[in-house]
Image 1: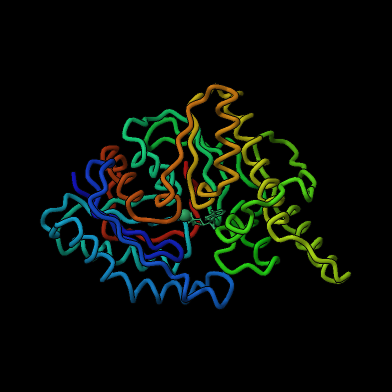
Image 2: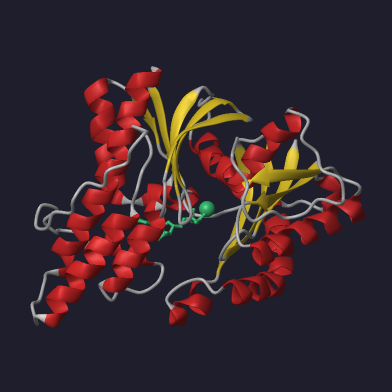
Length: 334
Ligand code: KG4
Ligand code: ZN
């Protein structure tokens, strides 16, 4: 089954053709970094306009690369939630137009479900059930993937997401957007024990996260150092902060895996590209003899191939939308 998938939930306009949920026939991504970098973050209005400008060429490129015409496809899939509403609407309406014109079924895909599915493209033998840490710019979840379309949130952030926290810390250090990526690069060769950041307390749940205190902590630390005219090694600061944030993520993931009896562990989302997170998770999994699945780096950030992968399983589960499908800014993965 060949699915054309479209992704426009944030600042990447992407289209891909994926066969049977596992084989990428094409994957085309137009990044909007140049449009947002001068503002130091994503400007939603600019993102929507940029998607509108780019989407036709991106979809055409994906079809050409896969050697497909619309008539060769079996379905059209699109990210419909969660994300920036104006940005999502561009992809949703484009997909509806294609579905209407071709008569092919329309498959709505949840953005975080598709991040998890990036692992199916990297590991052809991976099947649920497994436990997945989903860490992106807007979400930090520990998710039980009971089946391809059956999910349960075990832990989540009470405030800021890990990606947002890393982005804001990077910005406070004067690094450009997208901060998390630059922070990771800046941390190379740095001493992760140079600075310590207090461990946030989260009451009532052993698996939930809280990152807003850590964000405030580093911003205040840098501010005070600036005021006193003190300098710091950016690589040490970057390595220390990244290490502290990722330690919190891996600690809870470990606890959840042990408590719920999972031995198959996966990472997903933009932050799963982070070198410290990958290294700490690898170490933790080795210690317990867990199997670890990490998406290949090109599939960690937003892309449409992962949407095509998840769409296949959504279709098999009977999830097909009418042409009145709408975009939704926030929606639980369950
Ligand atoms: O999943 P994603 O591409 O978009 C959302 O759905 O939000 O995640 C974007 C997030 C941003 O916060 C970005 O800074 C972060 O992922 N990110 C990283 C790395 N690559 C992307 N954070 C830390 N280290 C990286 N290597
Ligand atoms: Zn994402």
